Image (cartoon, rainbow, N blue to C red; front, side):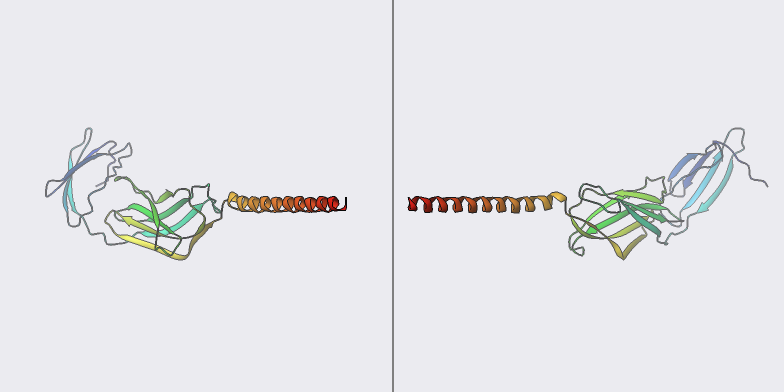
Length: 208
């Protein structure tokens, strides 16, 4: 029997315990849907469409115990400064339940203290490239690690000694101390010249 493409077909799924969900195919007959991440769930499926005899089948869900696969991470800008908002683009794959979310953890003291930022897919999405925005960061050397999780709650932690970057002090942090030193130096020189002038004037008065 040849497969028949049915544009805009109606696909109705119903589980043995009463859960149900209905989706509609696109013009190419493709219907995307996501079921709750529960194993051994029995579903009846009914497909209907225009001038189509309804078709029926059923299936049982399989367990998903496979952790996501980490592909890579990039951050921009490559040399961030205090006025930048760094963005970490995490790429991961999951061929079963799909990628739910990714997080990045940042620390300047070996994770005694840390901050974290994340991005999640919507329930019907499986985006494999997730750009995670942080916020403006204070100067210092940062270590970071990445956590990805799929819809079956399988979690992968990616940590590497090369996962680090640094943010230099803002230029004003250098200008202020230098300016203070210059002011002190100018005041010191002025006082020295003034005292020298007073001493010379007193010496001239004594000669008179």
